[in-house]
Length: 102
Image (cartoon, rainbow, N blue to C red; front, side, top):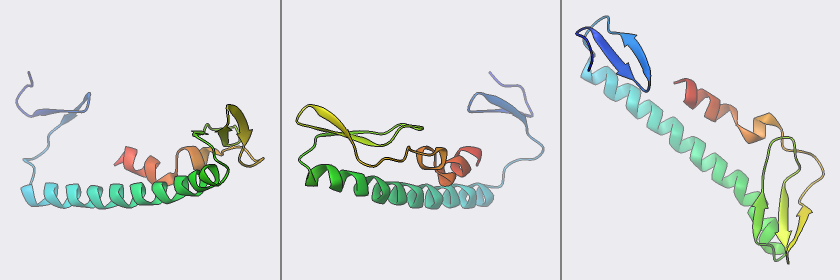
């Protein structure tokens, strides 16, 4: 239950200073959807580059974790796809950090 003048937003409480304008809310929502869609498309292309290597080598799984090199499972063995570890930027791209703060 909320008190008049207060709104609950995703486990946080914000004081409402004025009634929300439906047009402003729609613009904000559409902007978020556009950014989220671009993020998903970029991430899919990024993961596809790893998946194509896995398919080329007859692998089955992708192991992807920050601080570790990306790995694949081929015939039960886990093998690195590359030597360099996954950076924080690769694990949580800037686009996603921006979406979380929106």
